[in-house]
Image (cartoon, rainbow, N blue to C red; front, side):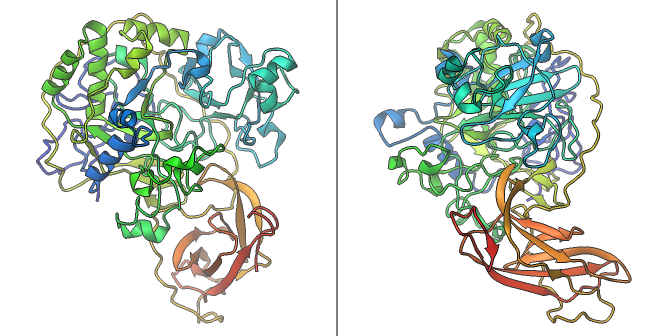
Amino acid sequence: MAIIILGIAIIALTRAATTPTVLTPQNASSPSCGARVTNYSYKVPFGNAPWNVPACSLPKFSQSADYVSRLFNYGNQNDGSAAALGNRGKFNIGFGFGDLKTVFSRAVYTADEANGKTIQVRVCGNSGCNPSNLDGDLPYGDPKGYLPDMRIPWDPNWPVAEAGDNEVVILNPSNGQLIALAQVKKSTGNLLGDIASGAGGQCGPLYPERLCVASAKILRDQNGNIANYFTYEGSSGDRGGGISYYAGIITPQEVAAGEIRHAIGMGIFNSSFGPECTQAQLNSNDWKVIGKTCGTAFAPAAKFEWARATNISTRGASPISTTLDPIYTMDKTIPEGMRFVLNITDAQMESFIQSKGYTGQKANTARIIIRALRDYGIIPLDTGGNVRMQTAGVVSPRNRELWKQLGITSSEDEKLLDGLFTETNMYVVEPPINNCVDGRKSKFYCNYGSSNYFAATSVSSSILPQTTTGTPTTTITNSTPPTTTTVKPTTNVTANPTVSAAAPGSKTSPAPTTTSSAPTSGAPTAPVFKEPIIGSLQWNPSYFEFDMGANLEWKASASTAGIKNYVILKDGQKVYEGLATKFVDFRVEDGRKYKYQLYAVNTTGRQSAVTTLEKTYKCSAFGLIDCKFQ
């Protein structure tokens, strides 16, 4: 179903949309949904990314009730005990109070807080090294991927939460640069201390003057240029959902400005796992299969976090207890990227706030967050033990002080919205369309440069009408972020001609029109596969990691009219279309037989004969050593 691009004026929910216009969230004004506050002082990051588009006029997803039930009943870890059943619908806000060793919170700092101090990083992790892009998108094995030259803003006194992925986001509002770090291990200055802290075990004893991390990335666009986080709208490969760690974060600065103008990111326990849906299954739009016998992720997610896991217990490097596997079957899980929206009126919101006894700044903070949940919704983008909305939390001393002024002062405030969510006051909206870097468009995950909603003929009429009440702007010292300046693009990184496996959601290709080995008159010559076809470890842009992939290469076709493109079908599904004469298929399994069909098309539309390869992919050990088609 096509979806509305919201205009500045929000169309009544029972009327048909006629003229879609682009919404600029930080400049828009609406009396009923989205941007309500005039003279809004907060600069919303990520431009017109889909999570910045209000949800009020977006069509309801056909399977909305099913997925709301999954979130309510299984979003928090639920083993069926009385205590677990009592936690259903209790969705916390991760402000990050408590001892750092027990806190799951993303620390957000700005470059000015480092007071001119900088540091270099050394990149390695307990589950393997994830090469940095600080010095550019480098080839696999380049030493600068692990010991980059770039220095990043860093104050050694900055606190870091230590109970989860030890994530830190460093913003430079003056030039729009965003650096994301994961598994940060702060050196103690001596080897024994580093081993005790985990820094020595993760990165080793060398380079103690560098900051030990498992991942260090500066936000870059799809061409490899350093991006401006205020305007960039594409994927980045970070976190479970494949978009920036900073996307969807509730900041105290925007709450102080009186409004949150984006969907809120959250972690959930029951994120979808594999086996991954095939393209044919996704194309079928059959919800008896998608999300029930196979898993995926929805746009605007850019990767499928647990595609290689086949149950709850095998997710992650350290498998959890298998006792939950019989409970958490595929039909209890939720694709990352799916947007849930709170469906209550202003009167119901005020009744809830009154019932909790909130007054003053705490009441206003609750009101602002609830309005965001109603106007923009929440999107699962990470996996955790329970549902937790993500914030620029109190790990940062500056943000701790701002949250205090907003009435958020203790760990009890993480339960700010307990009792608000029910199984009947939420709904799910249709996903946007990812414009994938391989040229495809998909409502399922892929690496993308932009993602958009499109015009629809009508919208759901089952969503409650929302009345308007003013939200006062709270004045807090130092709450307005610095003015932005345009970031100067860096030199383009040369694109690798190797093309990744097709993104889910692509259409089935029509059958080739020729099947003989000899070219038809006027057609280009047939391309021929080069053999042997082997597998090797290389960058997989679909999962934003290094994986084993089968390297298909072929001899170029000849045509007096010139070659327009090559096409590869795999078991009848189009997996490649382009001008490169090589393609890496990451979706191959040891012991499986595959049928590839390859042909060329010239600029006049004439098609070559089809070259067919039908062989079994075999590896000598564990799918990782000496893999080839035989």
